[in-house]
Length: 89
Image (cartoon, rainbow, N blue to C red):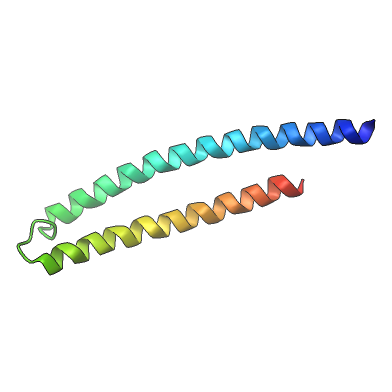
């Protein structure tokens, strides 16, 4: 009986934690969108995005992708650690 109650309590705790992680992920995604808009503005201010050279424009797009991808990797790593911790409790 106690084992079932503990299991149910653990499931409920995991559900609450998952909801928190989903909310954190949603906030991170909207922050990421803001970050990318800021990067695009800075790159545009430097004249790289508006350059007539397609090579330069491609380089700025690649740089923006790299920044976004690094941020995603960091966030993914944090979320995986949190999920593992929640599952192992």
